[in-house]
Length: 289
Image 1 (cartoon, rainbow, N blue to C red):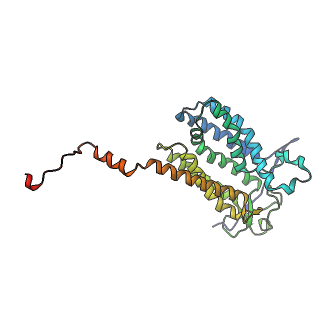
Image 2 (tube, one colour):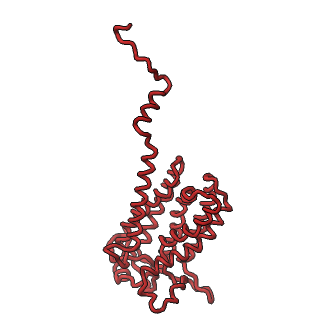
Image 3 (tube, rainbow, N blue to C red):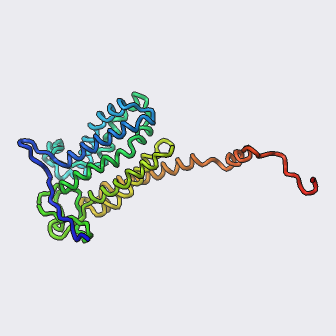
């Protein structure tokens, strides 16, 4: 059994005058692969591939703005008084949830303009979120981001270089081992992706698939981020509050869908009464025989 995972982080690669971040590459690959899968799936909901790629081209602007905005809001002290640093996205500092919400917000006007059903678009994209995160978290692992406090688990990370992407990592990350929550989230989406594809074999009401993803991912991320080393607000980290909101919203929506699918008792009785073979004529009793 492993006592610790020794890891050398590479926050960036220099190609001459150009510096590339594995984290950014992972996000870009995840977006492209997830978008390709969505384009293939969308026909089932009557959405053309052209519509999908047009939405994704608009959404990418919202992804960048939203992911950066969520990060900046949680780290305002790092950008004052040098507020110009806010636009330096290439230096790192993005939040997955912000990217998702920003992308949806920027794509929504296109949906409205072309009469694309919002929940159909979201259901088509449901497994694509997990697939995109699979590649994005690989980038986080390479650069050494999303680190937590000290850990004695057999898969704790011990970094062999002080150069990691995570701001102010715990000393344990270089001495004995610390939590690598990107790894935990990576495991989570590895399981989530095939589960959503399996569920997708059945026909569900609009919004079921995406809300299932919201409940699953929100609940898992809520617990994973207890191991993370970041600021808290009223006892929880910012991503935990968003995860909790996703879990509650998704659960309420799924319960409402389940209730709609259950026919009222009177309706069910009437359907049984009208079933083939049913008759209003009472069965003859022994005295009638």
